[in-house]
Length: 404
Image (cartoon, rainbow, N blue to C red; front, top):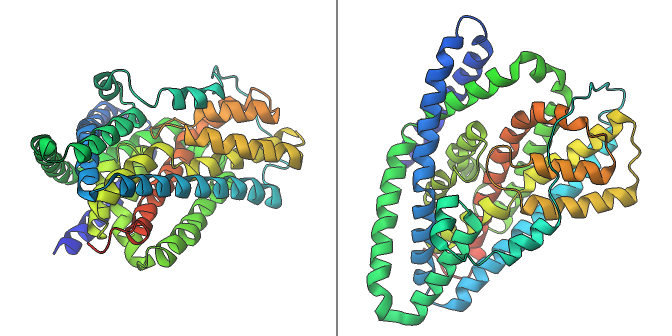
């Protein structure tokens, strides 16, 4: 019965996606009066999802760590997640650099430059991220939406509850109750996901327009083909070989989260839906409550592909020679920067500015990139969310928690 409802929801989301694209294309002119209504409905949906992200993540993680029963097992799950995400991000960067260079994408393309005032991400930001892992003010971390600090705070509280034993039972019980409340609210919000995706995608298509969509159609098609192949081959292989789970069943049950991520361009906002998909695939809460939020924060495989892909494309289009030595530097920088890219719409723009400067590209390419960033970000976010779920399914077998 649950699988049937999930299938219906997936179909409804897909229909909402197609109708939103159609409306976005038809909106310029007579239908522009609908834009305020669509923006309002889409904003309400996004706010409803974001409302429960941090209570759900914090309480689920505390309960999950307490359920693991030992500090060593918690450390094992966290370490496996970090190793998994770092390795796949490095692989994604390599693929993104090799494929467009091999195909010669961008050669013969004439790009009209547009200046854009974007500040490049400084590499010291990675050090700042490490330095600020422990929140000086946990309440401010929740208020400011700093997912990494919320994660660290939840881990500290969860491990402390383990150490205190029965003395912490009252707090753990409270966390369990808040977690159940959050899950129930998310279940209700999910019923409106087709409407939310419809409104979000319609606004995206309307904002970019058909000319922008068609102008870089070739590179976008190649980029999306890369995302597709990466998800099927890499994530499918991980799910099959490590997770001992059917590839078809995985993609079928992960589709609600993937389509929501595609429409909203936010892996963080998709977390509640990803958690529900992981539950349906039998992933223990002890694994999904840590692996999924961590993935939304540091798993940026598709963003890494996107960054590498666009650097090579613009280098070819601008006639800038990028040597293999420089490509190696861009590869390493891309891996570091993609880990620090926030899981929110437009989070990759500043990272691209940094990589473009490293590769010696004209500053004018930023204007062109920004014009298609959302279109690229939709596919990248969808791919990232599939990667988060693939990690969770794999760790169901590798974390050593036993069958649940």
